[in-house]
Image (cartoon, rainbow, N blue to C red; front, side):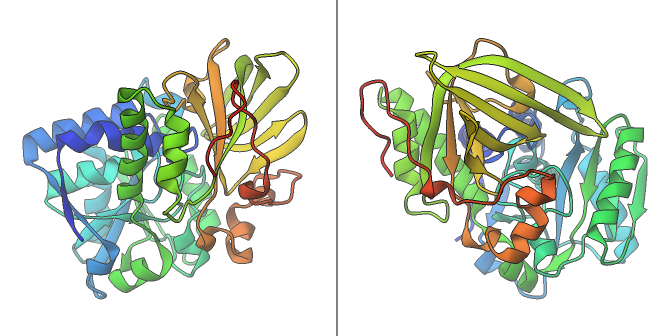
Length: 376
């Protein structure tokens, strides 16, 4: 069922998107401000359930790409993704009937909302990653036969380029990354144009609604002085993301981060509060794997999320700092993201990680300080 997104939804939506973004997807604070401004200027946004999209409709996803660390220095105006959309529409010779996120995470759950407010288009409540991934070929759209090309890339000064690599989504990513670097490390894009029928076949449904559910669960738990992680686990139980595991609780002891080839890459380490155990998280824009005492506890495509231990506020990779008290959780991904075809595109091997995929629900949970376990 479609619904109308207003300013009142934005805080919860941005918080939930940042959790599902597994540390990446861009700064949720910046995204929230961009959408708020667009709604105030142009009005609320219609969010369409995937089942309500006409099979013959043209849906064009929009997003931001680049290193998340750069966004703090190059805050977009909001016009850039519309420029990308218009450039792709002109190339296709057709106008979009709707836009859609390519991922659910941080700013990239927000960019299509900015586009929708500015253009009057609806946004489809779905995406192609079910989380955030660093590379454009890492989409369920591509896994199940949709080509990302032609795609449009736009910069902050109104410039745009169209890239067409046919069915080679990996080469599309490589070329677009090069253009993004030359645009200053961040750009806005329109890609993976598809029919409404293809949305229903290849997208992960209702992830904007899910992000709002996640964000509101954390807020409500804080308001009622209950455990936000337990509340989150309960809310996720009836969704496609049905399993949550607490992986680690402790304090950040080291962060190594660099901007390289258009990505924020690095590793963060934490020590448990009793000093007996160690967490290591590797990231490439997003958290990829969590190891506790050298053992894999959660690995892509499942979600590794780092939360502030007191408020359960999600911590992005660019915001990790020495001394933060954190809770690391793992969340299971939908079945469409765990097929052999999907794992070949965004499983551990796709990132050069020397680990096999193991579902996070097979991981034992750590104990709370009082000995209780987070609900399964």
